[in-house]
Amino acid sequence: MPEFTLWDIVYNLLLAARWTVLLSLVAFVVGGVVALLLLLVRTAGSRWASRLVRGYVELFQGTPLLMQLFILFFGLPLIGIDVSPWIAAMLGLTLFTSAFLTEIWRGCVESVNKGQWEASATLGMNFTQQMRYIILPQALRIGIAPTVGFSVQVVKGTAVTSIIGFVELTKAGSMISNATYAPFTVYGCVAVLYFVICYPLSLYARRLEGKLHNVSR
Amino acid sequence: MAYQFDFGAILPHWKLLLDGVVLTTELAAIGAVAGVGLGILGAWARSARTPVISQIVGIYVELIRNTPFLVQLFFIFFGLPAVGIKLSEFQAASLAMIINLGAYSTEIVRAGIQAIPQGQIEAAQSLAMNRVQVFRYIIIRPALKKIWPALSSQVVIVMLGSSVCSQIAAEELTFAANYIQGMNFRAFEVYFVTTGMYLVMSIVLRQILKIFGNFLFERRHHA
Image 1 (tube, rainbow over the protein chains, first blue to last red):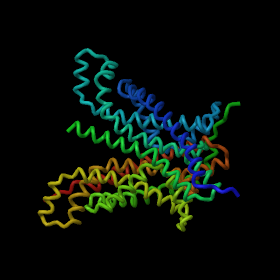
Image 2 (image 1 turned 90 degrees about the vertical axis):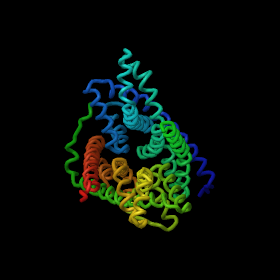
Image 3 (image 1 turned 30 degrees about the vertical axis):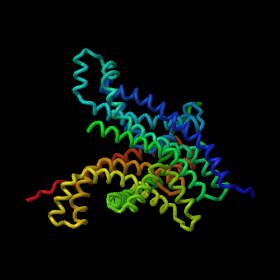
């Protein structure tokens, strides 16, 4: 039987962690773009469209991420789209992220003083101009801390994709644990690696939050 | 050939799904009650003036909040037996949920406690209330009232998160779904229905927490 040193375990986990990081980045960036579009529909679209976006958000916030992944992974092939675990994971996590970011950013846009909308309308600005020059810059300042905070949730969410067979940090951990019979060490290392990725983000989010409070005081 | 959907294939297995709902509800209830309890304790410990205890709680909170629930679950279920702590699937799932929610609610409750004006605490002390009385009547009740919506959201998140407990074969709703799709190969239909059930559960849970909150923090009519 081959012997596994601690370094073997950590080294292989590090290789897999690249996929965790990549998946998080893709989900976060693409999800952010989708969320921005949804946000515009939510604030500017017709009542019907805005209600649709609300339903979308409710749906993703009210069901487990694992179920969303299962539905994509097993559902898409039925309508003729063959998906690998990687595609399903990416798609699922992107949709998940977009729903949550839409909700977070909506709160930020709404917290911008209503007078700002009225004043800019008085100046003859149309919706695009209002958003671009008046509302979003202010909402951005409020929104950056919770957005960074949410990125931690995205990184942790990637762990669930291991269940549909995407080999990222958690899945690699399970495989190594099965090979080495050292679950305590392996899952301990997996947890440490997640912590190393997430903790700086958490700290950064908290610092941003502190800054915002100091400014507004 | 186009795929023929057959949602009827799930009907014969309704009992399994129902059992799953019951277990998910049990897990959520245990997690919510013990987790929030742990959170209140943790918040109290953090606001106490003993640096060592406060720091230990702080480390616990950060460790849990910055690692995935699934990994915590695996560590408890697969890792702990290596150091002699063997837990059943249900015990491990409950413990993981309590520990997870405990960390989040420690932070949430702490935020509520920090929002209590110092003057109220001093006023209570000047009325000769002891520390326990101050904490119980002056600090924790208004604090909980303030953060109840945030706490409710977290409870719902943890309930939904319990779906990954299927991975250690805790027989909750997702496990039932996996089991059924293994029998009738109707994966999409089963997961679709199960997702709907989770959605209903989260809506119901949110309502229950809202009503419970109203009941708990209802303004008492003082003379």
